[in-house]
Length: 365
Image 1: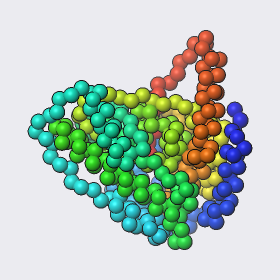
Image 2: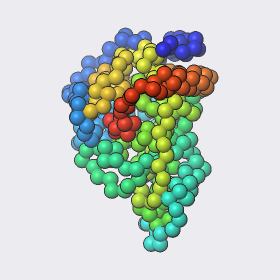
Image 3: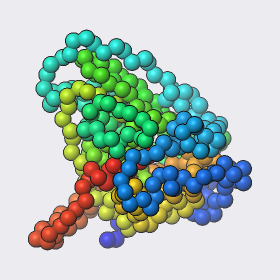
Image 4: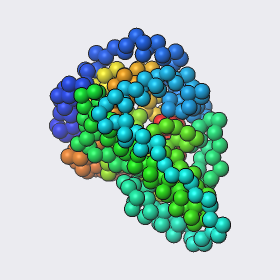
């Protein structure tokens, strides 16, 4: 497979015009930052494990649950020093109380509830909505979620602002855009949870940026919000890789939405844009085994020092060809043709594809 149109290959040139981006493999972490990486994060994430298991609590969970609390503080400090960042992240952590569950349950069909919940979310800042039955592999180890359904909410970025990453004291546009989407996810997830509670059903909200019980990328993939990219983030057919996610779990009867395969995974197999744009060289060219599933994986030990020092970085998702509004439509057309040809070429051959649900279960944040 070729690397796509010339415009995609030329994306690498845009990184060179941003003075805040060092070239790949030219970055060296500060000694004091590296000293805080006391334990490799790759084994905790399950790198190399051949058996399926629940993900372990990790970066952005409460510091007592993992060994990276001091690195989290470095990351927060580096992002909050950027102009405009502090205010939007305060908003991301500010939310209303959940209301009591109404005593009388509204009685309509699961299809009607799913349509109503989706409509509510789209009217309250969501760029996309997915619904998946709960899987215990969507729950971090040590946590419990009892609700049988998860609604995943996608918050679309402003590409012109996102492409300014990474941020620093001279330019906070990129990280402020990221915080703005997290704030929207907080407002939306709590608003939807309270709407569901007003219908007589339990609901819990799970916004970012801090982590809690619920993994968000696995049910996002299972519910059709996108495919996992080489950079470890979700790629959505409508918005690319700049999405932020939030979730709501509920016992309201719902109907699942279907996974969406549009060729992002196949494209990533040969695309080199994010791997070459990554200053610490943390993005691998090949898939690796992670908790029983072969998938794209970003080396935590290489990524996180730069992430912490550079206001949460974001270079890989901003440079991803799928995030470019001028490139994405051509990619969708090209990959649709290739997928159709692939199906035609293999229609008579016996296949044993891996379950999409099984693959999604290993996609931790």
